[in-house]
Image (tube, rainbow, N blue to C red; front, side, top):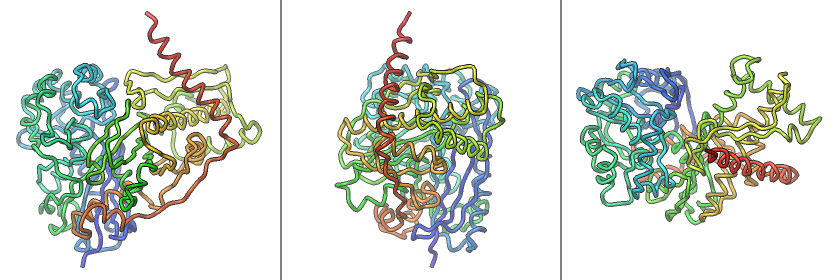
Length: 526
């Protein structure tokens, strides 16, 4: 009898595949890079064919690493960034690029070309905005589609399919045009808690009254973990699996991470609002679950049934975190391209400097909004600020700036948590997964700056674990998604906040909030 599933996670720069036992144990994992095109400022594009090839390479590699036969894999599911894939009526790639090249058929989640359109969506005041923190983000799909319709009318005329990336992968695997309740609710203004999910008056007001029909979007979304069909012969051959493998309706990558670390609490919903998932990598997503809807200004959601069925999810976020630390290294300009070795060297030197100067660089302050403020201000026009620079251009000056940028990232998390708890959450425990778990500096700061107990998932890859829970549900290993989550949870390692650091970080937080206020005052000067 098969006892394994395949989980596929497509991030910003790579596709990862894991073969996971139905107990939640990761048996094999492989990663393969994907390409990105940046033809203009704020434009970021990908090639969905390249993504699919990377997925196939990763799945075949993970199967080999696990040392099991393809027949032992009973289910597969996909999580992915909330990127927008556009195909023509024949299902072939269709350009989203100002270059006109059909290869670039995917608008990457972080693309901010649709800032003007996002502002127009916000100005409608429509009720869909109540579930987006009151403002539309250019990272959502309706402003991006508005931009395409206006600026690439030939693409709009030829379009036959619009997909969130996770749904595109499910379609490539199974041929099914079902769309996940997670993707449509979180990024397409579909209201899953209402009898009629799409809001025609909103779509008409923003000029997308033909979006549902043109994009072959369904009237009803499919709950996460729904069995949307088996692998097609072509997909099975490309992935190295069999046509007996069931495909589960997937989810956005950060939501998979939230499921991987919070899904195990599905057995005690009375305490679930104490827990927050921090999925931290290139950017950071903060997600909390509650049995009842909690509206948060400047947050995304509450979304109904986008991770666990019948449970509401609220999301906050930081548009750049890991990417910001890379940027700070590049900005300094003297030490080369950021990689794991360089980040480690900087962290080691920071700790040496802190041993000599515990309150390191305490006059250097950073606002980390270099790519806008996703939460809790919901201001995509916000900019980053650095205060306290001098003429020092040494490696140590980079280390000081890196450290204070890390402090700012952690204070940004506290800013979001405060907004959540002010509205009714009771968050005191934060579950961290993603690339930041490899940074001792950030893990220390997340606990000390927020005052939360920080749990690092024992799962080798909590995002893959969450997607494996979805695949196990579709495969029929468990009767429903909550049962799969409870059975496959992996626990974690606990870190308590250091009370001695609190006074210093409280002072930094007061300055952080004052810098936000000062930036607003500067922006208001005519």
